[in-house]
Image (tube, rainbow, N blue to C red; front, side, top):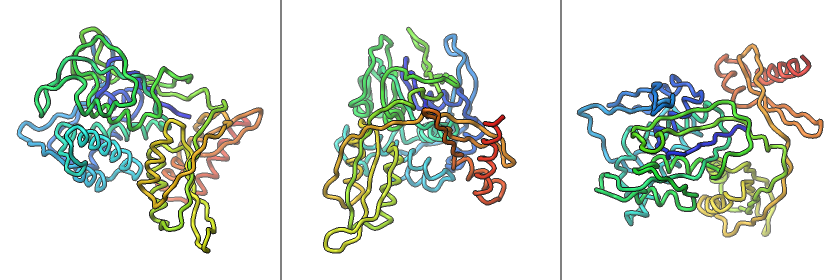
Length: 392
C-alpha cells in the first residue's frame, strides 16, 4: 500500500503540504493544469526550488494581484467552484470535505451554522489553491493512505481578520481536537487552519514513522523564518512493509428498505471518500415482503465513529450493527509494466508462495481513454506485460 507520512517537525501550512508533495515527485505542470480548471483569476502561481535555512526545498506560492479584492466566500460558493471545475469527481469530493471540516470548526468557534460561515483567509484564492493542490498532488503520487506525526502548534499570538488571537487560533484548536499535539520550543503559528483541516481530514492516523520502504522524500518550504528549527515540512512517500501482517478492522452494517439506489450510491461514495477500506451493498428480502439492501462498511477501528455518523446522516437507518473482525492480508507492492498503451501499474499480492496480480483500473481506464481503445484491451495488455516481466 502506498503511503505518505508527513513529518511535521515544524508544523504545516497548506502551501507547505502541496510543496512537499511536489518536491517528492508530483508534477508541477500537471498541478498547474488542474488548478487552472478551477476558473479562478487574479493571481500568479510560482512553484520553485529554494534553500530554506540550509535545506533544499520547494516553495508553492500564490501571489494575489495588487489591486484584486478577495471576497469572503461561503461554503456553498466554494463547493460551487469545485463542482464547476474540471477536477475528477474524487478530487472534488475530497476538497469539498476539507472545506466542510473547516466550516464546521469555524461555525463552532463563532456559534453559527456552517451555511452562514464567512470564510476569511481560508476562503481566499490561495487557500483554495492549497487544498485542491494537495488533493491533486496526492492523486498523482497514487497515495492510498496518509499518516501524520503529532503536530506542534507553536506559541504566542497571531494576527487575523478577527484581531490578535492566541496560538493555536480558535478554529485550528477545534480542528486539532483528538489529535496528538507535539511539544515545541518554536514561537509563532506553526500549524495554520488550512494545514490542520487538510491533515486531519486526510490522515488515517497520527503517530511515529511506520514500517515502510521509502521511495521519495519531499521538503516543502513555509514563508516564515524559524528561530530554532527550519520552517519546512517533510513528507516520505513509499510502501508499507506491514501489509502481510494480520490486523483488525471494524465492520459496520445496516439494513435499508426505504432508501433509493441513488441515495445508497451517494452514501457509498461518501464513505469511500472519508476513508472506508471497502463498501458494498447486498440485496435482501425483508419482513412484510419488502426488498432492501445490507449496506456494509469496512474501515480501520479508529474511523468507525466517523463512518457510523455518516451512515446515520446519509441514509434512513435507525440503527447500525458494529463489530471488529480479524483480517489477514497479503503483502502488496506495485510493479510498473510497459504496454503499447503506455506504462501501467500492476498491484501484486504475495503470501506463502501465492501470488496475485491485478492491473490498476485507474491507470487502465486513463490509457484506454487516451488511446481511444476498449478498456479490456488495455487490461489484457497489462496482464500480458506482467506475465512476461515475471517470467523474465
